[in-house]
Length: 80
Image (cartoon, rainbow, N blue to C red):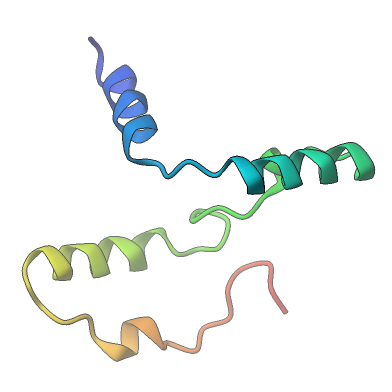
């Protein structure tokens, strides 16, 4: 088993099941003629990956996350 397959399998096991919101997104895609799964917001597109990594590392070490990291006041990429 390669690493990529293991990662995908693990992700499928821990992701919450969201059939209702998935149906709403699907209906919205049909109505709007757009692919919201491809266009949607992701951690990367919001510029939050490093911030979330730091917070997760602090949590695993048992350290309370710094408010400055959470409330940095930085505008997220793509938002105005």
